[in-house]
Length: 239
Image (cartoon, rainbow, N blue to C red; front, side):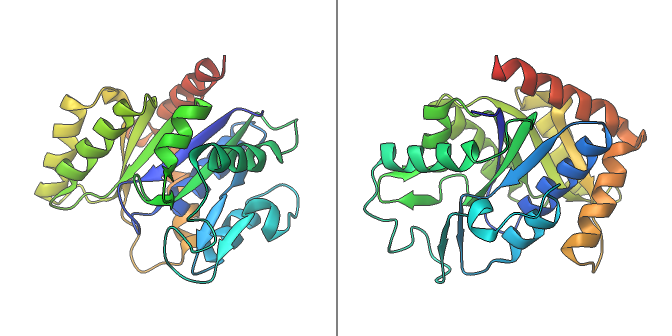
């Protein structure tokens, strides 16, 4: 199976797709060959279609997202009865559909860290089974310390290696945002990879992806160096 990085959020709506897109654009700029997958989606094809536009080849929706439900609910009715091994096999097959020349597959989760994929499985359980390292996307606002630390604790319980934490929509002029960043950099297991990504006002997801990628590739706050560190951690995790 092609090495994969799982991107999960502390909850829905924290900007996972924009982070996945920005990572994909940035790593391609740095010479990496990669593709994206979102095995499960519910309620909208929007995230899947965004990820498809980032692919080097035009791929059908059903390859990027093989399991789709019209209802914005998890677990979707058709998924509820799957046991953990069934869900794990489905995720592995989705990752395995990537062309072998890819250096890595970036896999976007659905909902939050513990959002159920079935009555008996969630993405953290699957990641533990498959040995997938995780990048956690979090919000910057009040309450993020509790939710982020709980998610990191859950990852430890499932023996999932967390390669980094993204604090999305960060405003340097906001005292709460600065406090949360400083606290997590002190208390997270990977303090050098607690990365703030700047707020992009009133923009489409495509514009957010482009602006975030430019920020990551810049020398501002060591973004490019952190990208290289993250890819190095990915290489070691795959061995």
